[in-house]
Length: 244
Image (cartoon, rainbow, N blue to C red):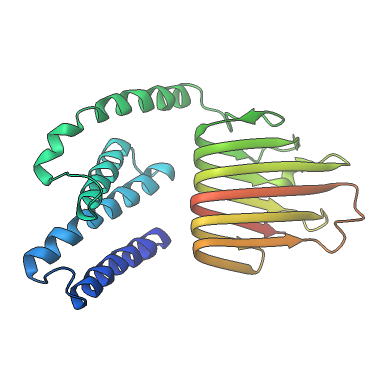
């Protein structure tokens, strides 16, 4: 079972556990129909998460269905929790999702028509990005970088990079997807990594689940002149740092 599948199964079990707990306190009645009514919206959300992860990893192009299942399942869950009124037959009210599809298509079309290693320029501050961004060219130049909110995969191979003799700040926050960094053993660095839901691993230290954080600093970081200062926040997905 994949990591996302592991979390999805966990969420489904949590939902079932909450339902059974409310049943034990006589807050809701337990019968087969009630179980189905409360559980199937969570199944839709899990399906949407699975499909979206496949899209972000480039293994599928069914992002329209992923968005549909996430929205449809979320509205049904909101109904079950008493926040809104939304039933299965209200699916026809989701026609505005077509505008979301059209808007997202503009981003995807731009990405596909201009295939490069990355659409983000180091040294810039980006407010939103979509797609795959890879920094693995020989002698690519490391510059300060800041990304706020993005969807996709971010891959940094610092073993192939030219790293200047200064402290370089790299900040990537609000990401849905994967962030992977390969750092050479002789380069001091410090990392502050946060994951809202997913997995984080910095060298040998690893954590997974909800609201996890790992902070790491090389022993000689404070006295080094050439070093990397990295801050990464992943909303849903994985953050990995390896040293070679």
